[in-house]
Length: 534
Image (cartoon, rainbow, N blue to C red; front, side, top):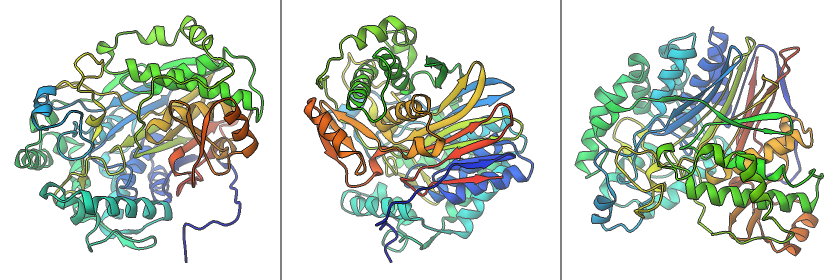
């Protein structure tokens, strides 16, 4: 039986509930959130429970050793949390080049930055949760101890990673990855049980110490010792110094709706810049090649500038306010013509991220995202702990004049972004689309699908997507209308049709009716998505 074969068109409808809702990419993780909510937790507790469970039930996309961001709506106010960690203090361009690298490596100990995920859970719990971490992490601990059967898309990407790693991860520092994620000498199959006792023990330590064990205690010691053994840069001092940052979200008004993102060092700015440029190009038309062309060109300009300027705020050569200004948007919109442009190209790497949205009957809502980056991250797993470390440092530049140049203690340009929508000061709800550099493109498309075409949450996610890759190259989904693809090709776009939807991100949406409090949720059909409702 082939669990990845779907010969017939299928659809799912928007999910509705009143007391609570969690939408994410794994059914067991969504149920973990609802379980905690039923036991007295609010939407924030549910999000923490779901996020912790996702480190167990979707390790192909995230882990305890990754970073996290959140937009939290509580008592009619939106709060932003940036829990992305900096580069180790001891790292430098010179030190990396001395190891023989002319650009940042993708795997191994060098691109490992300080993980922010455990600190994000603890901070969200302390500031907005109703339950202690010892309660919210229980479902994740249970999944890790007892095991769970792999879902189809999870199994697909686990096997792809294993097949790649068995030929490329041949040195000693990678052995723990195979011990943890291929314990029987192969990747677990779809429907096969997998458990991780070390992962469970780590989650227990995080729960019992409110994250301190990871940054100051026994877990920090294990990370420090492994890094020293393998000549890595991350040290216990880097972990102990880390604190998540509460930030003021940034926004733009798009046709009456305020679209909110986390400010730099995140790439959420790219989605806002693209929306600003696009709204200066006239009224969008349904299934129009001209509208698709204008959307693509707006995204190209926003992305080109975002990659050039976005990094730590104090290192940016241009202000956030300028990049979100009407003058900037009009100036960039004025450069868009009737044919495909060819901006300065750059290679777009693949992503590895999980996104979730949660809401409760009190009106609390959260848009939350965490990632190890590029699937399993660095490929480094601390032995016996289940802690897979991220490779977020791979995005640093080694060019001295680049705003995002590597520096010890600096945070890099970050791909993972949660989104939130409000209208006239009232919450509409959380949304997000994970997937590396697809994320702002997914945010842009979900917002336009919702605002311009009034698509329901599920339809807004299901609509066939496009993705700008580089230059004039546009990747479209297999079900993207051929007549539109042909018309875009006539405008000079180099259209490539993907064989499946895996490269186009995985999104979740929860909208709240401000009059009735009813929640309406959509989940991603491109993965093992699920909406758990109460």
